[in-house]
Image (cartoon, rainbow, N blue to C red; front, side):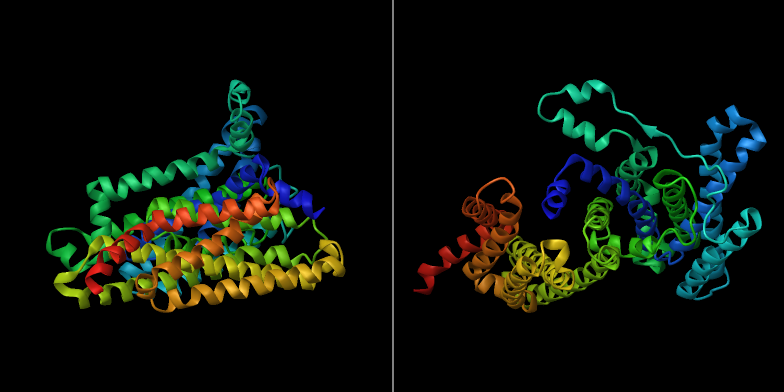
Length: 469
């Protein structure tokens, strides 16, 4: 069973599931990005998603009674979507009113909205359905699913894979990933985006040149509410076809961390959402193993904590690089320091992957029967644990002091190549013999290190060697 799960992870069906479960993370993450760049981070995303999800289900269900079976079935999903997004926008305006008008604390106001979203949905659901758990006795409608043309499946080699990944995806999934480009264009190619970024980076300077900071922040919160509302609608009318109590399960809070991992950039936010989608889909996939249900359920939250750790380490690396740049003065070499910073981030990611290895090792020890019994699981857990500790210890010096990447370039190359050889080798072992897989992984690992900036460090060392001698 374990082998079938591993093979299933590298399939079109798994990638399709990853896109589907990444959607309710990506949509509120884009909203968090916009509000954060405007200087009013939206802590109330969770409550807005719950309010939108519940309203969409109720309005779509009752539209069958209001408009009749045929008209209600055609217009009900869209009425539910509009109503749900409207509720999320109203909650975003309420947050703006408390913070921007009444000067209430932004964090406390957002927490209050989250409590309101959780409690109000349950109270109204009980009044309408007599159930405090879900709305299963209401016939809720779903948003449409997009079917790709059948000729795509007939394209040689890539056609079946593309068709398997993108066919029959909810319209909300398409909206989510297309919104990444829209948000990028708005932020970096429109006057409104410039005003929004200025309001967040330096509100006093923005006010001095005529930008209405308060109005801009209201508009950012409204957009944040729109994206949170779309994410909630996908949960109840795309991912499922009913509302469950607290069904967002912390996705609104995860969405606050995603832009940080993505470098506060729309494209980075999209990629980071896919990472969280991968872990969420992985949790669903390994749920078929005979392991405690809490193990797969904790995976998305472990990923959130790791994302915050990575962000903190990246911020620390950036500050250290800035200090070293200032120390160089006129001798400052911008391309070289960019290469050093990229390689230091690589070491951070490699160490975090090794942390995942430790978690896997702990799960093997906790539930050995799901992995072939103690005789096979325990040695495997010990091997993974030891290798993970070695890889963490190897990357730790380059994380602690970023300048070691420059002064010990060859050692950095060896650590990166070894780590990537292990990680990529495990994947390639599904298709090749173990020795061949590790060799290919090592070659690819060395290539990654050189492309990210190692080539520049080696060339510099070679130029300095004759002068030093």
